[in-house]
Length: 95
Figure 1 (cartoon, helix red, strand yellow):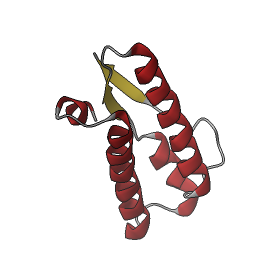
Figure 2: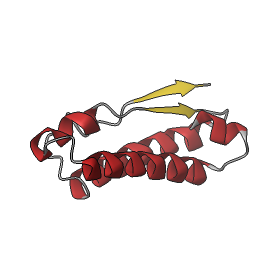
Figure 3: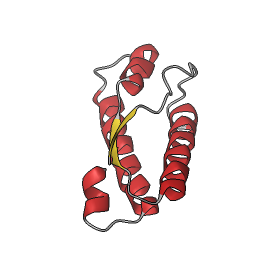
Protein backbone atom coordinates (compact mmCIF):
# COMPACT_ATOMS: atom_id res chain seq x y z
CA UNK A 1 0.00 0.00 0.00
CA UNK A 2 3.04 2.30 -0.07
CA UNK A 3 2.01 3.73 -3.43
CA UNK A 4 -1.35 4.74 -1.93
CA UNK A 5 0.29 7.08 0.55
CA UNK A 6 2.52 8.46 -2.19
CA UNK A 7 -0.66 9.23 -4.16
CA UNK A 8 -2.17 11.13 -1.23
CA UNK A 9 -4.20 8.49 0.63
CA UNK A 10 -4.78 8.99 4.33
CA UNK A 11 -3.69 6.24 6.76
CA UNK A 12 -7.31 5.10 7.03
CA UNK A 13 -7.65 4.89 3.25
CA UNK A 14 -4.33 3.08 3.00
CA UNK A 15 -5.53 0.39 5.39
CA UNK A 16 -8.97 0.18 3.77
CA UNK A 17 -7.67 -0.28 0.23
CA UNK A 18 -5.01 -2.81 1.21
CA UNK A 19 -7.42 -4.77 3.40
CA UNK A 20 -10.17 -4.82 0.77
CA UNK A 21 -7.69 -6.12 -1.81
CA UNK A 22 -6.50 -8.89 0.52
CA UNK A 23 -10.09 -9.87 1.34
CA UNK A 24 -10.99 -9.97 -2.37
CA UNK A 25 -8.01 -12.23 -3.07
CA UNK A 26 -8.78 -14.58 -0.18
CA UNK A 27 -12.47 -14.71 -1.10
CA UNK A 28 -11.54 -15.63 -4.67
CA UNK A 29 -9.15 -18.34 -3.50
CA UNK A 30 -11.79 -19.78 -1.19
CA UNK A 31 -14.50 -19.65 -3.89
CA UNK A 32 -12.24 -21.39 -6.41
CA UNK A 33 -12.41 -24.61 -4.40
CA UNK A 34 -8.75 -25.32 -5.13
CA UNK A 35 -7.71 -25.15 -1.48
CA UNK A 36 -9.26 -27.56 1.03
CA UNK A 37 -10.84 -25.76 3.99
CA UNK A 38 -8.38 -27.32 6.44
CA UNK A 39 -5.48 -25.85 4.43
CA UNK A 40 -6.96 -22.36 4.02
CA UNK A 41 -5.04 -21.09 7.06
CA UNK A 42 -1.82 -21.89 5.19
CA UNK A 43 -2.93 -19.58 2.38
CA UNK A 44 -3.80 -16.81 4.86
CA UNK A 45 -0.37 -17.20 6.46
CA UNK A 46 1.28 -16.43 3.10
CA UNK A 47 -0.38 -13.03 2.68
CA UNK A 48 1.91 -10.06 3.31
CA UNK A 49 1.64 -6.31 2.89
CA UNK A 50 4.03 -3.60 1.78
CA UNK A 51 3.30 -0.29 3.47
CA UNK A 52 4.74 3.19 3.57
CA UNK A 53 5.75 5.02 6.74
CA UNK A 54 5.97 8.78 6.62
CA UNK A 55 7.51 11.26 9.03
CA UNK A 56 4.56 11.31 11.44
CA UNK A 57 5.97 8.61 13.71
CA UNK A 58 3.07 8.30 16.17
CA UNK A 59 0.47 8.25 13.40
CA UNK A 60 2.41 5.61 11.47
CA UNK A 61 2.86 3.40 14.54
CA UNK A 62 -0.86 3.66 15.26
CA UNK A 63 -1.58 2.73 11.64
CA UNK A 64 0.57 -0.41 11.85
CA UNK A 65 -0.98 -1.41 15.16
CA UNK A 66 -4.51 -0.91 13.81
CA UNK A 67 -3.64 -2.78 10.61
CA UNK A 68 -2.42 -5.78 12.63
CA UNK A 69 -5.50 -5.83 14.84
CA UNK A 70 -7.87 -5.55 11.90
CA UNK A 71 -6.02 -8.31 10.03
CA UNK A 72 -6.19 -10.59 13.07
CA UNK A 73 -9.91 -10.00 13.45
CA UNK A 74 -10.71 -10.48 9.75
CA UNK A 75 -8.72 -13.70 9.47
CA UNK A 76 -10.21 -15.09 12.68
CA UNK A 77 -13.84 -14.05 12.19
CA UNK A 78 -14.28 -14.06 8.41
CA UNK A 79 -12.05 -17.01 7.55
CA UNK A 80 -12.06 -19.01 10.78
CA UNK A 81 -8.28 -19.20 11.10
CA UNK A 82 -7.70 -20.49 14.63
CA UNK A 83 -3.89 -20.61 14.71
CA UNK A 84 -2.48 -17.21 15.82
CA UNK A 85 0.72 -17.89 13.85
CA UNK A 86 -1.30 -18.10 10.64
CA UNK A 87 -3.07 -14.82 11.49
CA UNK A 88 0.12 -12.79 11.96
CA UNK A 89 0.23 -9.47 10.17
CA UNK A 90 3.25 -9.77 7.91
CA UNK A 91 4.51 -6.58 6.34
CA UNK A 92 7.45 -4.70 4.95
CA UNK A 93 7.85 -0.96 5.32
CA UNK A 94 9.21 1.65 2.95
CA UNK A 95 10.23 4.92 4.57
